[in-house]
Image (cartoon, rainbow, N blue to C red; front, side, top):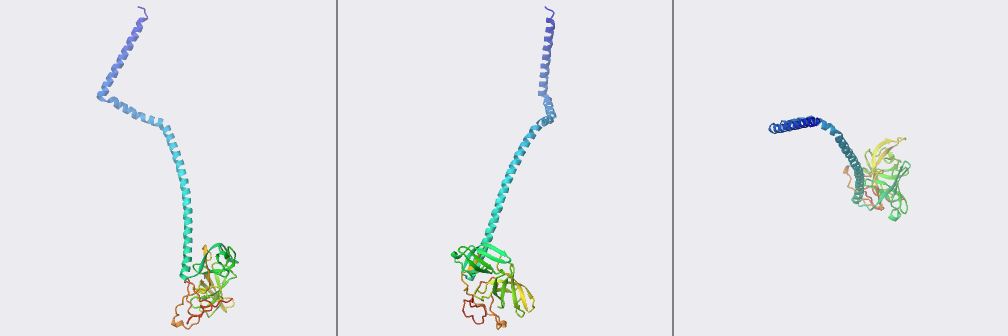
Length: 328
């Protein structure tokens, strides 16, 4: 036998012995694990010890997934927020429009109710333009000759007298407001019938009363109505309420401030009286204590339906200057 074959056989024998030792150890460990379960416990402990390593190893992936989800969520929320903001703006615009429509309907209802309560022959006309300059207090109406508008027609709203038509075109017409500096209205104190003249001041919230006798029974708070003198305005329409009285420069007369009853600075429609011959219901008889006082019997107050006696009619017994013959 060659000398080199002996070491080879020894190496093969050693390898076989090691293999047998490994197999015996494996069988022994399998039997012990099957009976005592200590290998399972060892595996659990090793798994628990390796958990932080797995967590650290998976952290970049989880961070990447979370970042992607967060970015998608933020973008979705931004789009939703923008859509909700647009819807909110549209809803607010609709609410504002509905509020305007409701206010317009309320004003129209008040105008029509006032005309119906007073049994007036009126025409509704929309306002096209407003000029409230201190030197020009005028309205432009979107109604003209083709709509039956005539010069001199009285213009009112639900609260009182606004002015009169001064110019009529085919499609539009101009209204001179009672607050215009060039305008004057014959008026009377509703409480006692004292006749005065109210002048425009160029201010939308004030009229002026001039040349009031010191002996006149006039008080702050008195309601002033049209007297019907001159035939331009029918009697009984509220003009305003006295808010101040003071002596004039000569101290021989009083002068006063009058707050207009009509809403000159608001509203989108007005009423045009088709006729100035408005018939008033008979006023109630005055109290016995003042029955003999001249001028008693005019009891038309603010908000009452306007009334007048046709031109040339004879006043009832106990009446006064509630009747005016049209003049000029």
